[in-house]
Length: 270
Image 1: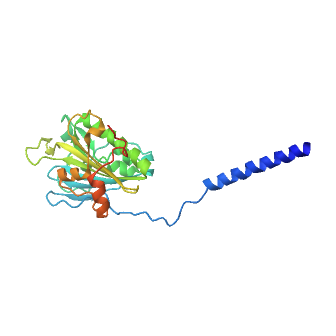
Image 2 (image 1 turned 45 degrees about the horizontal axis):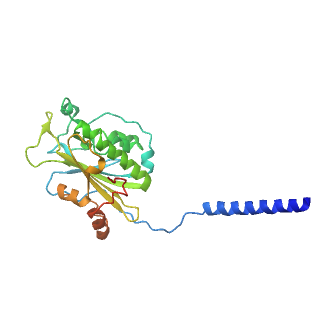
Image 3 (image 1 turned 135 degrees about the vertical axis):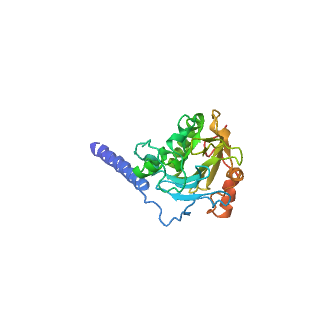
């Protein structure tokens, strides 16, 4: 009887160990090799602007098209990867003139008592992965006069969302900038820094299948409504800005992602 019990125990133990070994082997399977993932160099850079002044400046964490007439960027563009969202570099909070910029720049005095925040386009929180990138995010070439209740509310909410999306999708491409009226523009400070009427942001997740994109349009005023209120297609942002985004994509992909957006994919259902 004891032999039978012992045999049964050993048999069951062997079965359990074999099952555990199989499970372990399945979980430890090596990643697939020779999987081709399309990459698009400089995907974040829009087409050149023919109707505006622009100086293209490449920084560690972002690229800027600077408009000396406005004392503002035309646009700021960058890619944010999953690993970059996990940096630990602290904010510098030292706003300075971009040393690469030619011509007149905004300064701290221009914003003093203006009623506007120094609004980042490439946010400092996206540059925590590098001391240099963090420092450069405080260049005035990356800053616009922004209503405090936009900068600290829905604009910030969108920045937080983008970090979540980058963490989920491995990489996100972002282009954003001011919307400036052709006439009767308001300015602040002795340097005549133009106050935008609004802001745009377009976002692309290029490495998911299928690729996804979404746009946002904000007026430069208090933004209290839900974030989905400000959603737009990339095509509509291109119409408003007269800019061409993500042109490095194959035409069929570009046309598909820019003509529509999937609110459920971005977690922005009403």
